[in-house]
Image 1 (cartoon, rainbow, N blue to C red):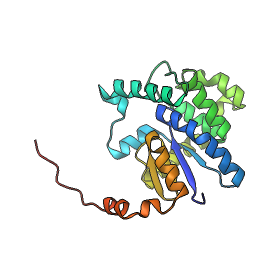
Image 2 (cartoon, helix red, strand yellow):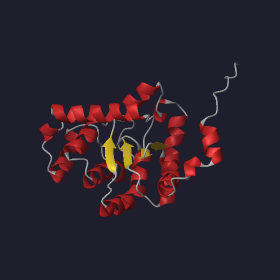
Image 3 (cartoon, helix red, strand yellow):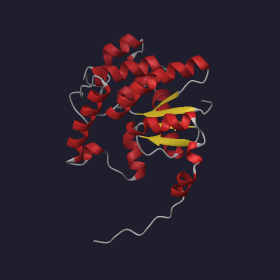
Image 4 (cartoon, helix red, strand yellow):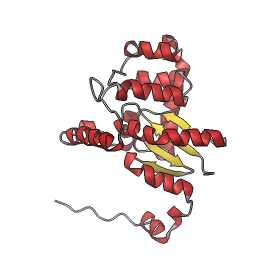
Length: 214
């Protein structure tokens, strides 16, 4: 468990919410060991733009499937999940609130709980006023230049590190994308030799084949 851990997330993502439930016990364990997990809120939309991709909610058919799938996954995991009034929504206020509150596990948990456990809006300062009061964060902190700059820096650093989606758990220099990769990431965290197995190394170096023309 010596590898550094960084978790990239966006409150717009229900998969980030689900993975957060899996990571909370690990956070406590790492905190007690003096090797905390670094929590990094980023703007998912900016990552998609940088990679030339669309989000699942932007693709008809995939949107509906994703929403139903995530509800099923939550049920299987025994996690309460209720979608906010609108989705996708603009998560900037929620992300800035996390930064203004110090990106503490308690703040991140409160914001996820607000949006995804209770299904409340997280798309504006006005919607988050009760939560800001609970976290003792003044409203003007969300509009402060340093808060905005910190979010931009987080997002730029994530893109530079190779992040292409959320949630992404960075174990050392290795990136593990998606809620369904949680067990894979934890296995690699506990066994550094996992990714050095022969077939793992071989597929990592496969050349890109020609795309079939239709």
